[in-house]
Image (cartoon, rainbow, N blue to C red; front, side):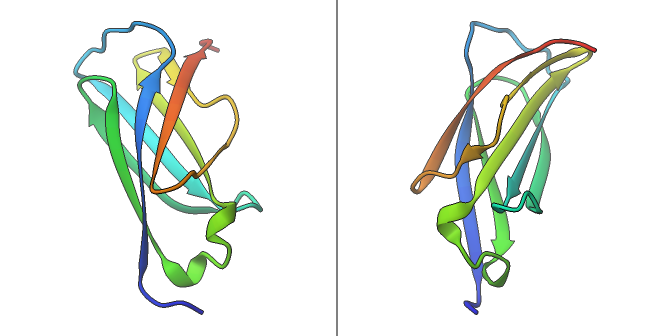
Length: 103
């Protein structure tokens, strides 16, 4: 098993022109190919695009080529997110978020 840390960085983008209230909150999760969440972060978002970074113990990542990201930006009842898991790509992954209908 490899020791140390793995850092996954990326950018959140929206597929349409949107203005955010300063109370917007983004949640980003890193999962393995079995869907187990390995790392997660929640943070305030004042504007899009927004950068993120997740850190995970390298020993928890036996297959770095099989990592996936999920993200959601929520403002009140409105939300934008990944409609399916997105594969981590290279050194920096860009996630394009789509409008998620309110329940």
